[in-house]
Amino acid sequence: MLDFLSPENLQAFFSQYAYQPGFVYGFIVCFMLASSIGFPVPEELVLISAGLVGYMSHHPEKFPPPYPGAESVNVVTLCLVSFFAVMGSDSLVYFIGKFFGGRIIKTKFFQKSVAGEGFNKINVFFQKYGGLACGVFRFTPGLRFPGHLSCGLLGIPVWKFLLIDSLVAAVSVPTQVWVVATYGEVILNKLAEFKMYVLIICVVLFVVWLARKIYLKNVRKNA
Image 1 (cartoon, one colour):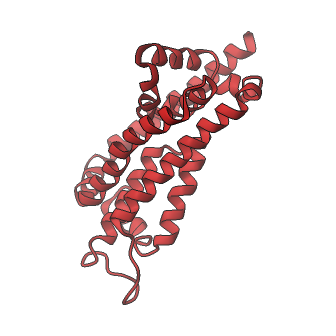
Image 2 (cartoon, rainbow, N blue to C red):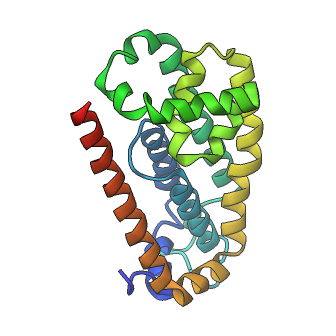
């Protein structure tokens, strides 16, 4: 794990995709859609990875193409694909809640992922921010999926959801990709410098996630 976080290994890993634009764009769309429906891959991790690939493709003098004339990943296209992939995944979840909400609330999946403590937090956001909660959920990874699902379930108008979510996504998503693509070398060096801390944080987050899953499972079992 620590060896993988070295600049050399990270550069070798991401540079192999710098000249595979079709694969990279498709990867972003697929993983954003998977993340939106609960697949355990953080959206931020996908955006950072996309930015690192963009950094590699933007510096052919450091990361030369495998053959002359090879098409590279375009940073602007990368930002646009990331934005529309995010909007597509958010909209998918919203419309699932809107059209199938009545059936979903009866499923074990809803009771496990949305109902209870999570749904109470979502209600707090709606009470505090009103319709703006559509955009607030974009910055709350743990509530992003159930939050967008609840927007459709609770009848937030389509135009309001798309307007607020797109404005927030237009600011946050391309910015993340562009910053990483522009300052990729600094980020790689910092990862190498603090790789032990990065590993510790990952382990702690995993332990907290696992402990929470076990706790919630025991609570539901006792109930």
